[in-house]
Length: 156
Length: 278
Ligand SMILES: Cc1cc2nc3c(=O)[nH]c(=O)nc-3n(C[C@H](O)[C@H](O)[C@H](O)COP(=O)(O)OP(=O)(O)OC[C@H]3O[C@@H](n4cnc5c(N)ncnc54)[C@H](O)[C@@H]3O)c2cc1C
Ligand code: FES
Ligand code: FES
Image 1 (spheres, rainbow over the protein chains, first blue to last red):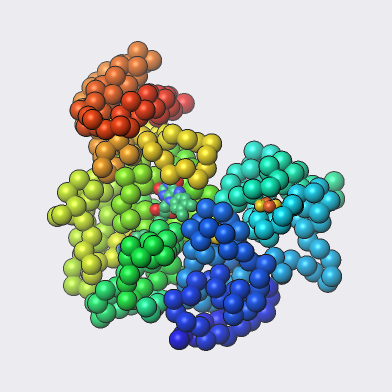
Image 2: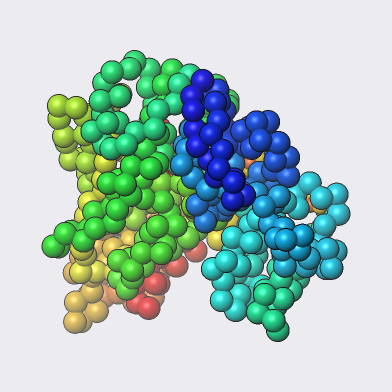
């Protein structure tokens, strides 16, 4: 067992964990942030995506100890004062989710992208979600939703 | 298994010499998968992903030094790889996905030693060297030799790759790989070229490296010899494709992938050489 310190969704945690755990295991099992989904466990599907120190990462490919001292944002951390994040709102309004399994990962990838984006093209949006797989929607509605979220944020 | 977060290179080397059956973990994008598959089963993992001195990109006179824990995203966002070095950025942009580029490191890409390691052909074309440190020793090895003579120049158990170094080139570095649109496809063929043209548009210097045209990324000497001194026009580029296909016919003889790779290399080499003129 080892002690690690994490800030998750704005809250500090000090945790005793088994050292062979990955970040995804600690988020889901120890902290119960079950919005983080496990799909492929090998970096292909993006269902486990979280924002770590401002960057989108696959939490199945980070050892928990490596995240010691880092700040993590999961989909649970996006709601502010009871208000959905613009990305979440746009996903609902554009019908960008069906079975929903991939959705938290896409929303986090979109959030990380929009935090730095300037007038994104559809091509750039597709690139930003190229590490996320969806078996239901065919992606177009997801791209629509991310464009819409950008407009909400810019008030256009 | 235990996992240790190294605070410095010194700390990591100390840990490495202290424990047996150790592995370094940087971005984890290769090794975590290999551990899941039980292909590697270290007793101790030493994490270097937060060692600041390994995360720097520095200009040092005529040289550029990249710390081994620098990520693809760091390269893409660095102002050092502009202009004649933008081919390196292109290679990094074509890696995996944003998630992989944010974690995957150049050092991990080299040590993992896949024939399709995308950062390697550009580094070979640049004539780059790597610095391998152990507790009592430090060696500098050419990236090219690291792959072609790995018994002598490969990394040893107790060593850490700390940095990659190359002299700022005069020529233009370009890169092309197959399957640009499928972002997650680990490239099957890639070419990096460093070409310098003189005032008569003749090739005065050339170094070319390939990925996945052999068992490891390598220099393409025959192609270089063919191009050296030639007027760099479309006709020569067409001829160059034939030269490389000839090399592949011998190197990949009897491989089922040969007919496919032979055709695919045409577009890849034309793109890489074509970008020299842009
Ligand atoms: C979905 C997916 C897509 C990918 N796409 C691509 C692609 O398009 N192109 C490509 O080239 N690769 C690709 N990769 C492979 C991988 O991301 C890269 O090889 C990456 O650069 C590995 O770096 P890392 O820091 O994650 O390595 P790790 O997994 O941390 O380490 C890899 C190996 O290197 C050793 N190591 C790492 N750093 C050091 C060091 N400084 N000193 C000594 N030993 C060290 C480790 O012990 C381990 O054996 C992909 C991987 C995934 C999962
Ligand atoms: S579960 Fe992590 S990428 Fe698929
Ligand atoms: S909505 Fe079902 S996988 Fe994307």
